[in-house]
Amino acid sequence: MSHAPAAIVGIGQTHHKKKRWDVSLGGLVREAARRALDDAQMDWGDIDAVVIGKAPDLFEGVMKPELYLTDALGAHGKPMFRVHTAGSVGGTTGIVASHLVETGRHRRVLAVGYQKQSEGNAQFALGSGKGASLGAGGAFAPFIRSYIQRSGAPLDVGPMVAVKDRQNALKNPYAHLRLEDISIESVKASPMMWDPLRFLESCPSSDGACAMVFTDQAGGEAAAADGRQPAWVLGSAMRSEPFGFPGRDPVLPQGARDCADDVYAQAGITRPREQIDCAELYVPFSWYEPMWLEAHHLAGPGEGWQLVESGATALDGSFPVNMSGGVLSSNPIGASGLLRFAEAALQVRGMAGEHQVDGAKVAVAQAYGASAQYFSMWVVGASLDPFG
View 1: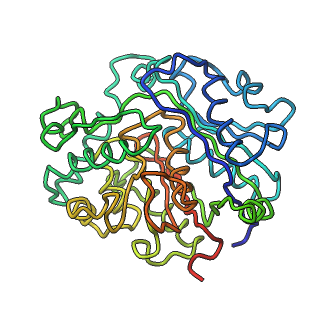
View 2 (view 1 turned 30 degrees about the horizontal axis):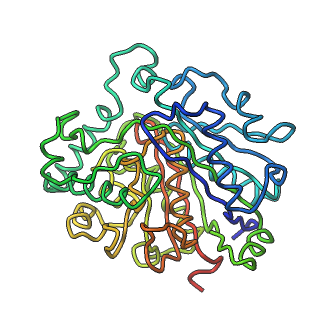
């Protein structure tokens, strides 16, 4: 490791719902941040800098919201950074915050991601304000069809992911969707949205926020000495690639594979499936679970769907994926990536409650954005040397 370690000692999130009209944008981010500070046993004055991430301003029609949210996040007179990398922004926000600690620029940093989809129109924004947008599902459906064709995956695999993630969400008190009676049959009977994606294979529109507190090695060790398990950032990486260029493979993007190679090398991981205990992946549409398992070297080419079909990715399987219920169950876009990163940290801290993976010591989290062209990943551990 060529930089100083960073530890996560505080995690907070809101209850994610279709409409959080009980709070303003300021109230929403403050709710998550307050919970993260309480978890870290800190107050607003203990924070040196704030990093905030959200989807494009057009999604809510509030321009430069970081200026408006300065007071709500206790950032008056402090450095405040805005991050934007489309749907991966939450993950990137966590990575930028960790870098500010790892480089020694700041000792305690608060990262916040949020979205209030009920106060905007994502479909309008995705069409650049021109209307008649095909939507994210319409953009990804051709990639999914290509994956099914090249891998020979049975069509039940997508519904299996949808059922698994919604059942995991029932164990997460913060999750938006709580579908007690979901089944493969009900998923297959739901309306077709973008062939082969059906309504119940698609993410919801959610209001919600997530926050994390980062500190340096001394801060992490002090938390551990106080009986509060930190999560250590063992590696983090970001990659991007253009939407279109000759030879681009949108099913297994080179950027996604390079991002995984980088983060595993930083963490000292040479056998991902053996050395990582669980994964929280950005899966807004069911088929992206097997696709990302392959793109991030957690399954061989054409084998991602076999892991799903075998039950290995279930909460009690050999390689649990999306223990929180994932993006399929809660999708406040600007927070969705940070929620993935937070879930991985909760797992190695042993603080995931009913969706805790027994004995989890190393976890990977991932987020992607735009037309599968922005990628953020990190690996976190319960110790700085989990493979020593």
